[in-house]
Amino acid sequence: MKLLFWGAFLLLGFVQLFAIADYFGGGFFSMMLAFLLTYIPLVGSVFGVLGAHQEWGWELWQALLLFFWYIPVVGANLAISLFEKDR
Image (cartoon, rainbow, N blue to C red; front, side):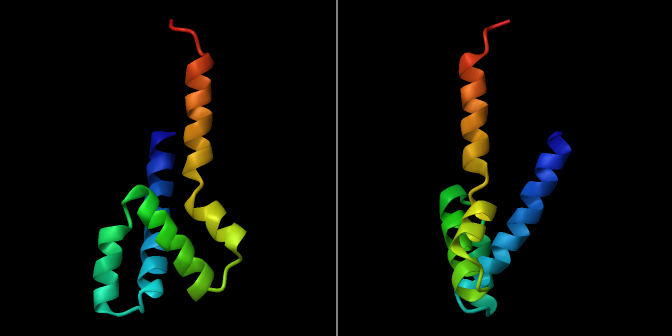
């Protein structure tokens, strides 16, 4: 399960990297800026949504679902851990 999570995280990171680079213009410097912003949790997701929506023509809900998937997952994990008794 851990390997699947990290594989998805890496794949999503590459998609986010190129979405951010396209948002900033697609040149060398925009790619360097995208490298800096991609793995900052909320900042990278926001710029990834902007790139996918404005530059790639995705619907807003599709971009939000792709780049902010981790918020409901973390919320569910937190809810489960709150209701789970100590063993």
